[in-house]
Structure formats: C-alpha cells, structure tokens
Amino acid sequence: MHAHSQFCWSGDHTVAALNQAVSHAANIEADDRIVIAFSDANLKRYFIRPSSIATTMVRDPSVSVYMIFIGSLGDEAERLRKVLPAGKSFVTMDTKEMPTILQQIFTSTMSMMKMR
Image: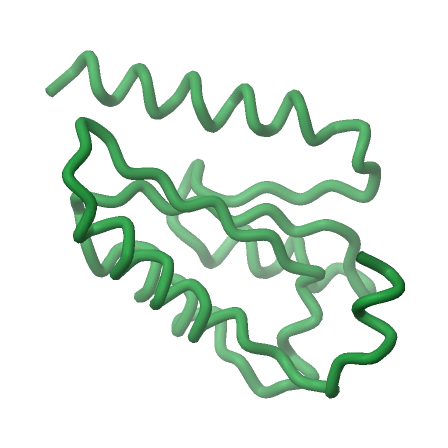
C-alpha cells in the first residue's frame, strides 16, 4: 500500500467512496449490509466537513456504516469521532488494535440483527 500511495495524486475521496460503498451495499440482497471505511482522518486539509461524512453514514438505514481512523494529525480523528454517529467510528494509532476494533463492529452488528 505504501508503494502505491506514493504515486497517487494528492486529494481525498473519502465521502465519494463512502457514498459509492453505501449505494452498492444497499443494492445487494443480503440479511445484513456493512460498510467499513478506513481513513487517515486528515480531512480538514481537503475542506471535508464531518457533517458530510455523518450524513453519508446514516443515509440508508439498511446499511450499517463504520469509520476507522488510522493515525491522525493532532486530535483531528478524535474530533471527527465525536461528531459522527455514536458507536460508528473508531480511532487507532496502532494497527495492532484492528482485530479488536473489527470484532467490536461485528459483535455490535450481530447484536443489532438479533433485535430486529
């Protein structure tokens, strides 16, 4: 991934990618639809408002959307997490925490499925 990213144009497509993923998941016939997006949380520098991400995360109730912020400039990831839907975003500075975060997401989704 590092070798690929060094040749990419600068910019952030988080919201567009999230919109596309939610639309795709919503059109799949399934018992449960989950989208997990990963970001470096450096959205401010591209003028991306947290409300844009929050709106996209909840736009289709048939899709459970989660954000995982890996790393951050300053406290930007924590500030984003506080604005996004409760329980739907995570911040980690250490990728060793990823299995635990993914387990929390899948456990939460399974719990919500049982309540339906």
